[in-house]
Image (cartoon, rainbow, N blue to C red; front, top):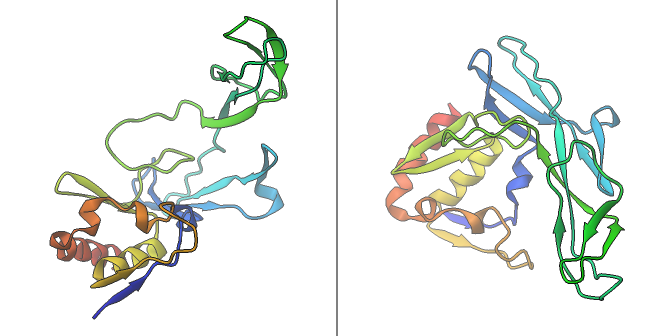
Length: 207
């Protein structure tokens, strides 16, 4: 009997290396997450790493992704003391402070906002799974009965394969709840009737 023990990995646990289709030659390429100071970029009270795109077939280089910003928050008004939420339009520069108007009393004041980071001009809706930095199509993806089955890389494929093969699938209750990758898999991946079909796809991807 095949047994799978959930290791409580998140989808992000597999995102340090993502195989994508090169936008120039359509070859299999890689987006890697930089882990040195050279590739660090300041983020809101912390850091994100600049992802590095590599195509070893045509040596095409994609420019560093351009971010835009949305300022948001949920403060208490200093005039009427009611709580409210604000959200800015898309901004070209990251603001240190943002002036918001209370919807209850119309009082305006500046707040230190939280920041959402979004990619500039990178929205393509073609039904394909795409990476979050350069919006390139994920290399490992296939439609299965109207559903999109996909994986970031070989480690992701191995983890999916172990899960799908298993006759006994055990959750590891460490407080992760429904946040782990396995807990959020769509039903068509969990269904026994699709097991052989999905395993054949994973085997082909590994070859």
